[in-house]
Image (cartoon, rainbow, N blue to C red):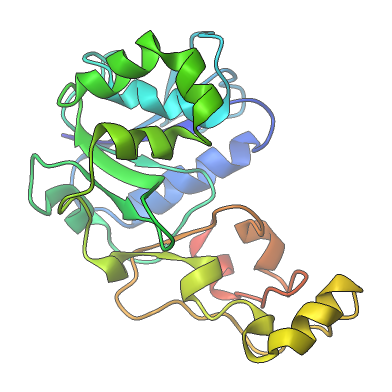
Length: 241
């Protein structure tokens, strides 16, 4: 049995995002997969989703992702993929579970370090990531921007990524930003809110399994039309449901 785990904390994303993610996982896996949502509010979650209530640890938001590195995580065991709520799954993701089994896998950020929108580990395989964080959490939270920066420190990057084309950034790899061909003129237009409506559609690269939406826009912002400088991505309507 394999697992998918997501985190819903606070009010940023409604239960609808969890339900859509669950549906996408079900449509795009042939392996036996349990779907868990670690949350502080399980209301309106699909009945097939295994909700696990989030303890109040005095931390916020993405820092709770580091709980996946605990030696024991509720009753969850085995190979587990964490997915952010704002990803769009575009094709079968079985390979993300089975690629080089037993190893930790995560996205390489396009600037530097890791992006923790998608990562895989065997529960209990890296307990020091959580233990060291918990022992020094006040200093780490003050010093670092987010959980992925701490993961990078705790698990230095060395062959820890999947094939690059499997998980891509909407903003960076889907030809989504209209200013790409406008250069300095585009930046001036943006500054004064005079940028014209972007033309054309954002397209994800061949071989993509998951598109991540870090920051704005979210999938809902561009599924039915452009949003600011970002192009419409009509394929989201097909997959994100």
